Image 1: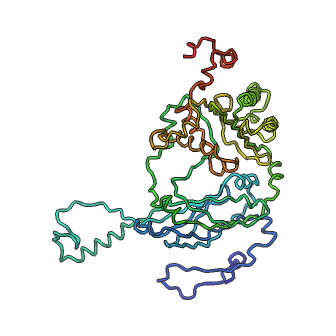
Image 2: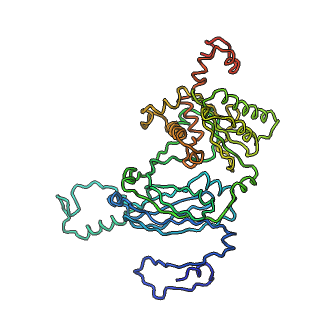
Image 3: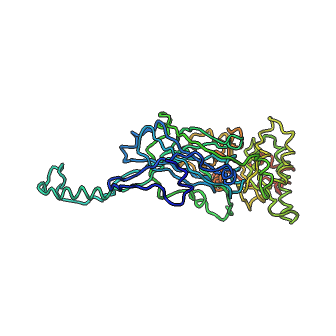
Length: 472
């Protein structure tokens, strides 16, 4: 049948002539050639997401656990929050389900920021049937397969118990697996995206909470920070392990369509009150000190009223002993561009610089209002490379959960080549994770500062006298 009638005709055209009570579901397959006109496509700028199928699904691991159907769910911030219909378990599960989301009222910076720095995540859920039966103590058996049965002749009571068991059957949704897609190619005049990605278990996923607000860490107890992320009522675990999905090569096919916006760089530069982000991993101590000194002088001018409060630069600094990790974010038109120009003479021997001059962001990643005027500074007791090599930190329970997540993210961050991948894989630690890392492995002064404590330069910087006992 022609599908245009569902979107153009006000009155219904088709109807079911002979209703059948035994028919539980009815599927209508429409055929649409011109759903939207050219003007509607340009004005509405529809984003179309189509979940096609799942191949090589390990159904044998779910049927014995009471799972009967699965469905997919995905969300795009400020655009989509959608789920597919339920499909029965099979080796190949075909959804063939498309959803259209108009984006004409969405600020372009939100859409561009998502396509450039985020990935669309598709989650797979299973519907599990189970019985919530409370056992009752009895002296003799009542079922037909019991040895000592005393109600063998009462067949109607046995049938009644079977009906009660059917009424006690309940259903719950269990998170099984997920996969993610990079849709940044939609901004390069390639309006149609088609791809398939490997499904992974939920245990291998690192989440990110977006904008981070820093509270005064000195006023919080250690347990309030390290135990804040613990959940008492854990959801049911997925029976699908990572090795099962990799061995079966379970993949999900997806298509996406988006007409605009084009010329992303021109659009972003026209947005007011946007921000830029810069990450510096430097081994040259003198360069890192001079670079960070300029940031502190800039922020002090804001505190003194010389500049606007929104011009402040925020981020975090990790003194790793042999390297310095500096993350800075601030207004797109401001000091951060001058800091980038200072790094023109930066050589590969001095470290790594991650910065995209064409990319801007709508919000800050960190809102830090204490400790070093906008920056959270961590002096590591031992270098992170030595901590990563210690196998004991990867045992669950040896380190607090926020601290363990910070170590994993920083380890992966050092192995990443681009800042885009860092944001797509959520590798920037949250402020709670940084505070937990500081409590576990941070010290007031780094080990190299203690060695040079007797020098005049060090004592002038930290405001201490030459007597080493004063520090102790």
